Length: 131
Image (cartoon, rainbow, N blue to C red; front, side):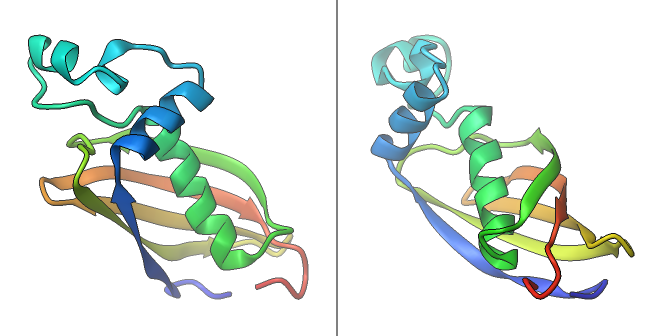
């Protein structure tokens, strides 16, 4: 692992099932994440992904790259445009820092058909020989 190394992109199909399951799994029962009619009444064209699902997908993206023994130390994300059903989110990343203690900092961007859905920085501990 070295600064400047790019992670391979990950394409994630944004399905209704993913949106609803992510909301339920994170105990986010707001209607905009599972009821299309109520989401439209509130001004959205459809249900949309919640931040906790996005956070989990960002973490998965980084740990999948470094290996199963990688430990997430910090995930700091900011949402942009929503993830609606029928779209695809593409996650990309770049290593922006490496510590002598086996840590790495990764800049992550997730885009969809509307633009940037998520930007953030993930800090991980990578056991020796894992990356």
